[in-house]
Amino acid sequence: MSYYTISHWEADEWTHEMEAIAKDKFGPMIMAVGASSVDFVKTGDNTMCVVTKYKDEATGTAALAKIAEIRGQAASTLPVRMVSDVKGSAFVSM
Image 1 (cartoon, rainbow, N blue to C red):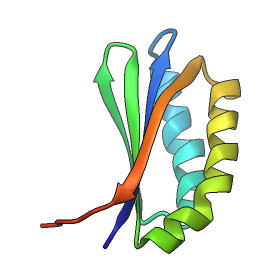
Image 2 (cartoon, one colour; image 1 turned 180 degrees about the horizontal axis):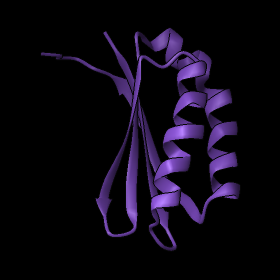
Image 3 (cartoon, rainbow, N blue to C red; image 1 turned 180 degrees about the vertical axis):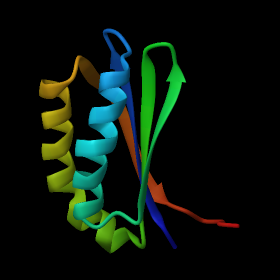
């Protein structure tokens, strides 16, 4: 089954520039470490989550160190901070 990582973030402020950087820089970086897909979801005025899907747990686990580096770059490039993250395998997909 697919494996997911979901990180929750807060921003000091929300800008279109941040959205462009997520799309043009961080999305491709995440895909390059083996993700099947990545979605940046705005969950509030200054909050978002990043939902990353991998084909299986082995692929997701292998990417964790590089994902940690990418998250560090995001926190130093943008006015954002990660507040939590979770990960796990899907048990039902439709």
